[in-house]
Length: 171
Image 1 (cartoon, one colour):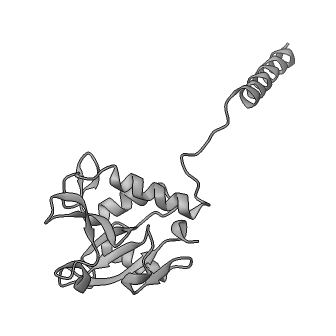
Image 2: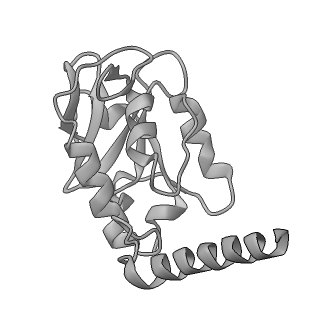
């Protein structure tokens, strides 16, 4: 009798499993981690979706607000790049295998993390390059998530330290 009940349970489980395999729609990811161009576009879309979100020191979500590194960590959160929490640690990620350091503004590509010396530390600020000389970041001076030019000769250009290209956005 125990064998009969066990066989019925196994048959029922197999029937349910086969039904799920053949009747459910295939799962499709919102983006592909293997396609660098799509990945860059999706990162920019995600970053722009929270444009105007308030600045908050230590903030790391659209609901609570962002500081600069909290913003970049949130944007990259589902893109094959778990970023460290602090901007200086994000800068030093270029030392890791598969990551790349970019030293010249003219060599930037969308999706690159761009770093600036805005404090006495080597790196005090981070944003995400989105192309055409622009980057998106969370600024304490600018009221939150906004877009600025890396070529701004009065502030950002002279403070540019370098950039890090993560594997998810490389060709």
